[in-house]
Length: 326
Image (cartoon, rainbow, N blue to C red):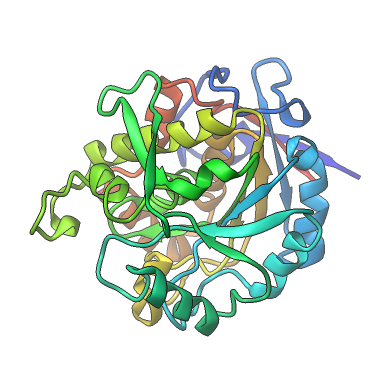
């Protein structure tokens, strides 16, 4: 039986105070999770397994058709917190005509070229199905509608080969973004390495991009980058956040990632990107202080919550939601 909970359940106690509703104008929500009144639907399961992932996909996957890109974060070699391969495999095998997709990195790690990225794919076990490095053959630009920082964003050229996208995200902290949810997964993960990622980070040539831009401006750049991808797919994009192994560090940190202190919580999914990232933050902020402290410090010291407020300003979705446990 499905159990419904309104967003105020998570906000009780003053953990987070972001109210109101902003109905999406970007076309990113399909009928399966259209708002009821002024709330979007976010589905939740505590079952962190392939079966749990498939059960929740049934609630939001009706609009996913044609050639399907499953956007994951492949992670640096031997990363301890990346998504379980068997869970991802269970979903991928149930979505016909689908491939895992990624792009190369801007930083000089083990995924900055297609050749070394493919070696990392093997090391990390992402070789059970086709994996498309979307910027392997270069980049293309797509429009950013209504942005104040960008008019267009450079993304991996192969992204245009897909009809639909499933955004499959390991929700965790992030060195620059504060947290990495569905927004970060496509904002950085669909931008190509040499051009798009440099645009988002406002990084000039011959500079260390990691020290160039932090705080609210970076959050706004990420939001506008993600909006380009969301507008491109329209109603044919859905979002999953897996709240497990939530280190303060991104999977880009590989084996140097800080050990998680927060418990595993489950899977949240929606056709509304703002609702799913908002629900993830709300759920994390309900953790006991000992588990929450490091994540909250990472998120707020980077002004990471600006991701949510700027998505709302750009009318990319709803920050008011109905939580439905399946």
